[in-house]
Image (cartoon, rainbow, N blue to C red; front, top):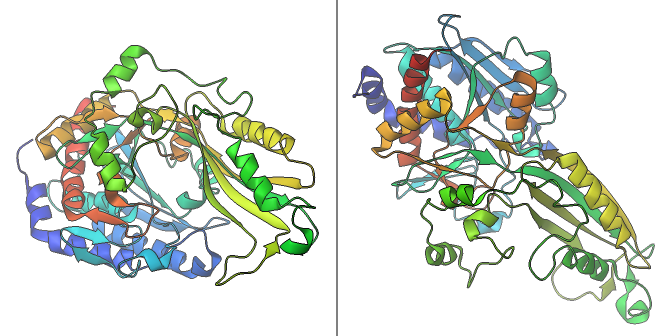
Length: 458
């Protein structure tokens, strides 16, 4: 597909496209913290305005019991294919603030990168679609129908998206879902994510004495909840870094030698990987490579742990409680509800004498795999090849987007994960960033996807 009026529009407006994204990034739409509720609502309204400006119809902010969903569409011909674009405008909490080089909601452009919370996950990526749609609608027009749904609860488990989808199946009817919320291998090695891991996320609390105690008076005589929690967590992996929960691996779908060989074709430099992370060596389940451990194998990780005194100076306290947040990444055909049940049953069973355990499930989702021979995948591959000058490599991702399985279950639709970020973008971490190169490449590639998908027919 040669350069088109769409490309000319993008080139002429790239400065405005960047400024609009920076405005969106200034809104602290943190869905996890109630103190940001008004900001989340304000962000939803801002997204609505931009969808209207892009030329979409029936744009509205749809209330939910939690944060709202923004919806818009452009139906040019019911006989043509329809693409459902999904994204999320909510962001992760910015903590710890002291590790940011610049304020997380005051975006800074430096060395071709946009530094701000949400720049890569997912404001920068979903906004590529808004600008691509604008470029098509103001020039050649859309080659097929589009529906856009941008939610505000992805970072807290998309609690209200399921009921919304179930209640709006006809409204959301489409031929494929297109999501940009994943990453590529590198700017010079384009790739398309063909699989995601599922998730089970929960919180554990270990309680000992009915109050904090003096560690000199009571230490050694009663169970310390922090010690107990650490012992319990440590026992969840064996010496080979396999998870010790009974039944955990029973449903795991093992990849064939051929499938593992195909995934291994993606370039990976372990020395560069460890150097970038500032670690002396990698660590993980025996018998698998680092890319496999981070994509096709299930995991269990502690995401936060607390208890006792953590202020300045010393306080010799034996705490009453200790807590941790734990996530498990799951693979086909593990089910999040079953894994959550197995974890809870096991964790309660290994509690040492002298403490009680409470396990609180938070949210979860299922793993998903996308076929690489579908018209939609082939359209995405062609679009990326034209944008980058290289055919993209199919890869498997380690993250979780639970709504991918939801869309397949409720709408019968497969998803194309058309992400343009990089693993080095620091998503969920301080100094999150997104490349201007990646942002503009996405805006350029998306119209090409629409072009090729429209040609494939329904």
